[in-house]
Length: 257
Image (cartoon, rainbow, N blue to C red; front, side, top):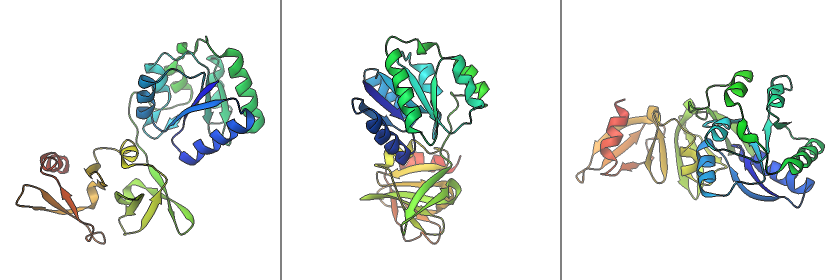
């Protein structure tokens, strides 16, 4: 049985994958996606799996958006932190669910249920709006963006608010740098992945190696080749960023929003 995990917290996704393998070694994990956008891309390029494990609230929206755009016929097991009273809405739609942290016995039962109903199963009839209303969630068609990142420094994990971030940079690893100059390692594979989680009105992909927060910008200097040299506010002034000739016009418009 092939399985897909939809989960925006990498560590949680890894733990769930390990638990699934421990409970049922015959399940083949065909992919893990961390956002609505990447999930939609995945479904456009791959065959439907036999079962989906999906978090509800993702960094760029809710997973119901995915099921409202793709006619999914396989069982969907939601992994969520919502309490048991709110989650009763799922029973109306015949959806199984697991409360976080996932219990191994409950996971085993959910997988057993998924095997019984794996293809064909009419999960395409999800009443998305009913689920949204019951859980008091925002519209699945209105994008939401990440509010915190979990950074690692000195063997500790620190939650960092979006408003505290000056820029993201790739330097072998992915780093987050705060307005006060503190530097944290992020557990992401690429800046592309991070860019999908950010509000484009306040973050700009200045280069392949860097994403900056609009409030971190101090000044711009024009260069002879029509490039722009971006200077950040203290204490991050030493981090030099050149905006390419192609990006310069759109970058100026972004600053003037």
